[in-house]
Image: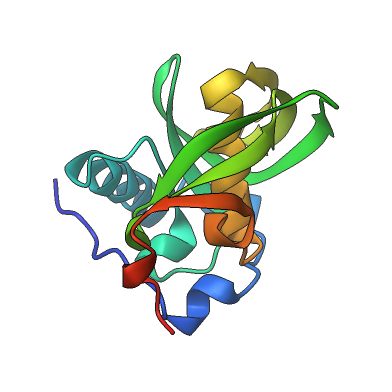
Length: 160
């Protein structure tokens, strides 16, 4: 399966809010091939999630290797967040070699459209909840470095 090039900082499109996907386009062969390429790219880069802006397409699409395997989420929205939070180390394929501790909600409720055009709604917790928050942030032009409480390594790789 072909993979897509991952864009990294300081690429300006990483800071742009992505546009909604027209649900009528989801079932097209082109869309399905793109979803497969996103998943292949995530795995080839040893990622656990990937957002469409990270490959240069500012559309509201993420892929997450969640408890059910790799899944595509289109126009995802976090509808509820727990007040309880946790601090964990994060990195990002678009900010290579940089790591930091980020505070995330322990639980989130997500609504989206799956790759078959079906509306899905589910709750996620722990690491999986953090992945959804991280990837959905990408759709809004927000990077994990914007939320870091403490960098743990790699600050020398941050663009000035």
